[in-house]
Length: 337
Image (cartoon, rainbow, N blue to C red; front, side):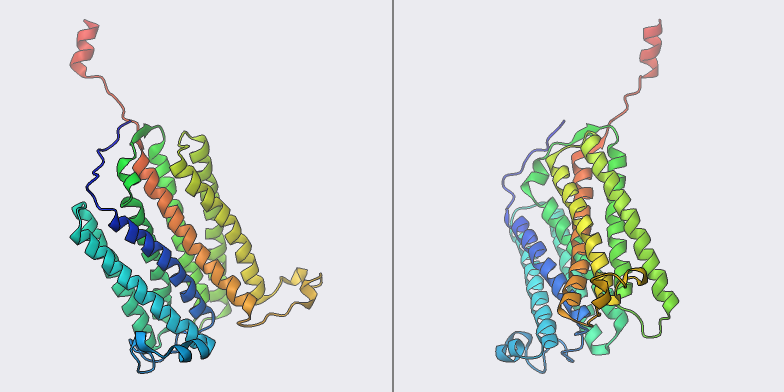
């Protein structure tokens, strides 16, 4: 077991701003989900201004007291701008403080992702393109995952943790990485169901529902295997057990939210409609329950993806495959003699 030397001269500010980026990006994803749920993407028809006003100078009373779709869309833009400012601050701190050189490249990459995401959102408004809205919705969780990675690798603990050789470490790494990939694939499939094309037929929708369910089942299996590997396979470090357990708990909640989202959007299954309370239930389009359950389902999927990525990163950082020591041929011949 070896611990890398800890550089105490490295500034804590890049890590602090990376954590702030995570904390600001998750609400941004939630509000962006509300924009999609309420179909409010075109509530403000111009960009980067808001009805001719500078983004930050739009009258507060008009924003807060106006229609709800305007409130959500303009709030989404303000949150996005705040995340952009934090990304710039993260870049500046990596340049102005003592830190590893590769952090600066990572900070520049995060800033580039924010710029691309903002441009994508603006072009979605200017061209009123549903496809751009879908790419925008998939790119946000990708940026959130990048923020989680930055917060992890810039922490003091990341640099001071000892690396342990362990049997099965390679398998743990692969399992954790593939679990994170499955979580992101679920986000992409979910975006297909939330941004239904106007020319899509029933077969198209049914196909993506089926894929969404199949990947959900695969994700459940992988999270169960990953939890068992961590708790029973000799990897019971709290740096892994805590996020793995949280992923499992959130995945259970996500399955419940998925069922509730289906019911609030499409009603109860036919075989259950005669039972109380399903018999009296009526789907209310863009109702409070439908909007919040659907948005929570989307946002929780992004959180599961971020935590699964954190598990994969920590598994790769904490453990490495046990080295195999081979006997030198000359030494073996000498021993035989």
